[in-house]
Amino acid sequence: MNTAFASHQKQYLEGFFAGVNQRVGMPFLGQNAQGQFTDDPAQATEESVYGTPLDELCKEELIKHEQNGLDVWDTIVKNSELDQFPEAADMFRYKFYGLFHVKPAQDSFMLRTRVAGCALKSYQLTGLAEIAEDFGGGYADITTRGNFQIREIMPRNTISTLIKLDEIGLTSKGSGADNLRNVTASPTSGFDPEEVLDVLPYAKAMHHYILNNRDLYGLPRKFNIAFDSGGRVSVCADTNDIAFYAVRVDEGQGVEPGIYFRVQLCGITGHKQFAKDCGLLIKPSEAVPLAAAMIRVFIENGDRTNRKKARLKYLVDDWGVDKFLDETKKKLTFALETLALDQCAPRAGTQQHGHIGVYDERAADYYYIGVVVPVGRMLPEQMKAIAKIADQYGRGDIRLTAWQNLIIPGIRKEYVDTVKAAIVEIGFHYKSTTISGGLIACTGNAGCKFAASNTKSHAVQLADYLEANIQLDQPINIHLTGCHHSCAQHYIGDIGLIGAKVKVGDESVEGYAVVLGGGVEERQAIAHEVFAGTAFEDLKPLLMRVLQTYLSKREGQETFW
Ligand code: SF4
Image (tube, protein in one colour):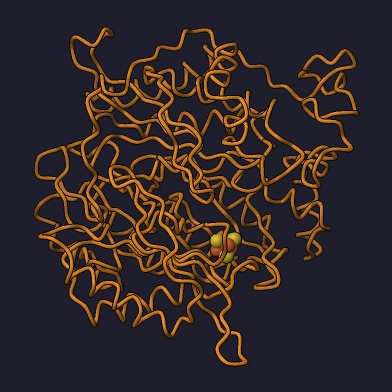
């Protein structure tokens, strides 16, 4: 066995064993007649769900209580045979299988996959292309959680889609509704020369732990987990409910020197909050059981009456971090250590747009190439071509980024120019342009009923216009989101655009409110509104003026924000 493989395998096992052996939390399903929690459905009372009386549960909780979303397989099969959509409650339960009924925009299903740690194999990308081609609308979108969404799947194709997904080693279980969303990891994990720790094994261990513990489905609300390697490319971990940051602790800090995780909690940028360090310093092998314990505390105590208050942030706001950690400790067999943040080596800076272009890997003479995929949209032939490049010139790996782009790692020096040419040949590029490399757009009104504007189309038009009219020497992130749900995280963009209907004369047209000044990691900031609803056509010259003002007023190489 080669040494690199052996060490990788050890990390996987470390994550798995820790998850299995050190877990104490029981898979609670409800309370028995004595008010005690039980994992035996037969003993669970019909009167409450984790202590919340049935008559106080919100609509979605009642649907989950009536039937677990994981149990609608037969319904999907039946509806697939009849080529019909399910009734309303099952529409919600379908999301446990990652199937979203998109109405009225497309009146079909959108499939959201899981891609553990944002890492795909070439055959999986090819398989996703075939799903998009055979069962979907002939395209697929990379999301800001480093996974793929495939749209325009008709009811008759739902089962074939889920089976095909399973056959290529992927799943969509728990990717929607009140579940643990795709577990993300720094997209350069394992080959980034600047990383503190290869976090992909831990993200994968977390992914499999979630998939194989039934009590971790049906949370009070959705929940995000990310692993940051400390390397060049950010995974926006500070926007997650739980963020693990790999850090180095040197001699003389009162703990064994080595590599640990810091733990940040309660990132939810749609509610204008980043995750905050909670003081914990844990061994990497403790990440999975710690997260599992925290999730179970949330499951048992989160708000199940009001969807707007059902995220982890609100439980921790209500209790305080200390009480939350005290409750977490009760579910663990190991003690939790704390260490002041400034006793850890500070995280090195991330490289803005470092996910685009050609960069050296840890191994000598190997490179990774970040590819610009405008607003994350790919056609099946492009997906297959990328998979082929990864097979032919790389290690057969593809990584997806939080900026809806992708990275092909493991390219030997002598093939770099060939790969660059191949990328251009299929209609993408690898040049870290100042705008399109940091362009993010949610689905918009072409596929989402909440959207006020056509975000993806506007994003591409805007980038074309700005790149043709202004020369920037600093990367800028522009995030377009169709509504306040913030799927494209407008509050963390240098420029954030939130879809709005705007009155122009007697007409209502598509437009955006403009927020400025957001960022993540060392540039962490929540953008604030500078311009109220502006018609899209007026937005182009408006943003030109904003960028020209930046260029004329900045001092030296001062960044946009
Ligand atoms: Fe739909 Fe709003 Fe999410 Fe955009 S941000 S995809 S409009 S829910």
